[in-house]
Length: 222
Image 1 (tube, helix red, strand yellow):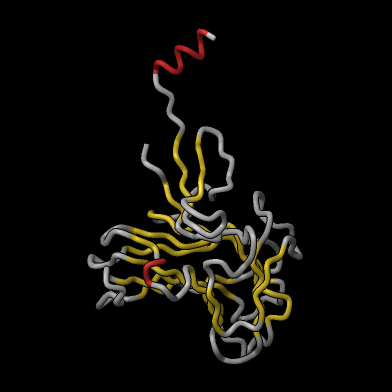
Image 2: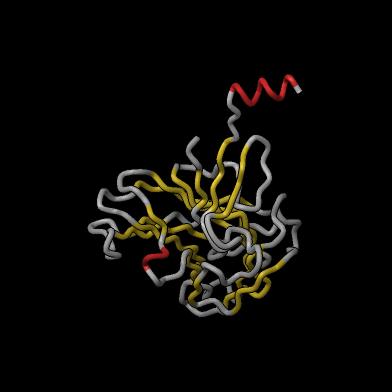
């Protein structure tokens, strides 16, 4: 059976919050094992980001901006989805939102033209509970690589994000929606999950367990 991929290399801050994530215009980014509201199930940790009151947007990129050889290999013309669970511990203002953006590159690492970016819509946060957010788009025909960017709004109106925006269980998959979560450390009945490389810093695969008729017969015979 063909494997299903989660292309987010560090989807739930398994060891740290820096592997395979780059940041811009954020005050601090930390790995947390708890949040003001109980974290989603199967999430031992999350990433917390805080931001000052400047007008610049805050960003987190996955994978890193460089090198281009680490970017996600894709096939032009197919749909890809980027999203995950998020929570904001500050008040629910106009600019309290996350957006999920997709950046397309050709095989040489050059931004695709005319569509280099598909910017996801602003998804409002809430202090009540974790939310699931994300965005999907069709890769341009000449696309061969993908980078993803998490974005939060400028805070001149809302002020400082002191208590943080949290996110975890991030998925980057071929498709149009958030599937059942998995990474290389997941235990799922009927499937084998694995890291392609370093644990919590590489692509994950999920493969259905299929037993041959001979195997099943031998099991039944004891």
